[in-house]
Image 1 (spheres, rainbow, N blue to C red):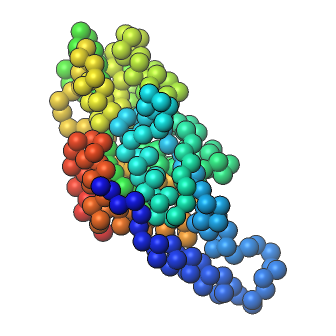
Image 2: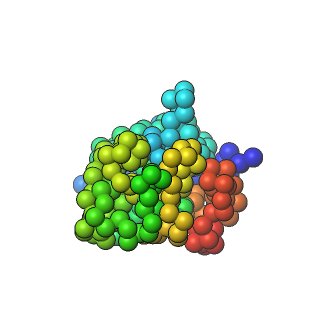
Image 3: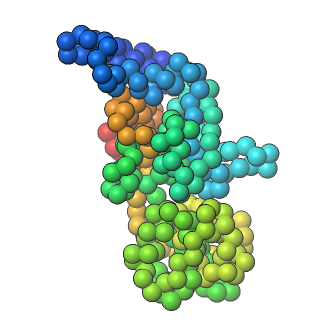
Length: 279
């Protein structure tokens, strides 16, 4: 049973740190231009509001997806719930996709993205990332009646991806001789290979393996995932107090064994070693 919250003392310590920072402003002029960043932290705002707004993907099982009743379930929604519990607040999930992740942060529609957000160097120029909580890699999903025999066999094929995703970048840069077909959602990219519009879809290995298990007409290459990547929580830039709290939460999630248990629950596999052993 996953522990529902990290001890409330973590929140108290974080809030106390903000108060201490507030008392250290130069000159003690509370009316000076430019409010102290600590007083405007999302951490304080979320606790005061009583609700944590989290960006999630609605179509990326087992990371997250909608069940028959329309409820968002999966590995990342469970992490989001644990984060909300650690703060002592309610959870509100907001659907995102590869192109809306940053806009929902910038417009304050969400407090944090927990939506399979790969922390690339390019993205880190515009988004602040936490330490990673999971690692992933990509594999092609294809129809058995139109097999892909190797990664190199993607040359000359039509391959679908989710627009703006790391797999979009991967296919564009690494496979210039491949026709990349972009879709707004992961579900549409997967459907394209099922319907024969493309030869394969490039997506996270856990997702494509799950699709192949559900549909006997589909298959995945039996090789190590390519383009291994670290997945982090993303927040609006410039809020170090909020980022510190998220990093602390992830460390506790790992050290408690809760992250490993959640990963086992949804992926039926061991948490990647690069995450399990991080300090």
